[in-house]
Image (cartoon, rainbow, N blue to C red; front, side):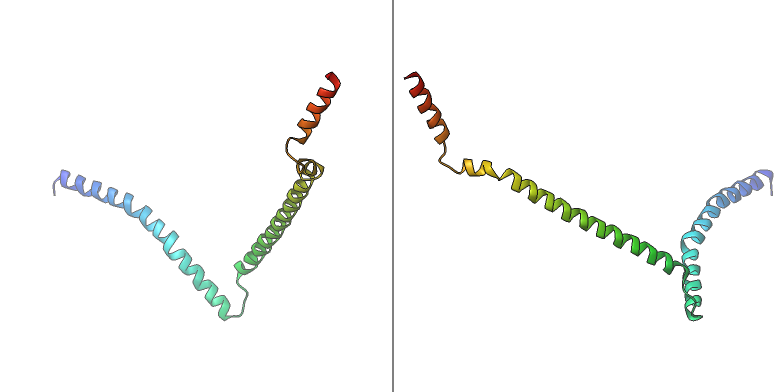
Length: 117
């Protein structure tokens, strides 16, 4: 083999390793690690031991339920406040507006006519 063939072989080997090493690492991380985790959980379940993540999941579920209850409380309070605001706005002003439209203008015009009249 001549020196350029050896050089080409080394370059090919380095480039191949530069591609294959990260590919192998990603494969191990995303392919094999979850499988081994599931296998460990299966063994723990067979031996009757509680799964480590189940406690964390239960705590997370409790926190989510508590947040949902808080949100429901806030929505109920907001609906009550909106109803109260609507009642305030529809109080006496609505009663005065329910009379004949323009009646206050007619009274004012009548009062002005009588005063200047």
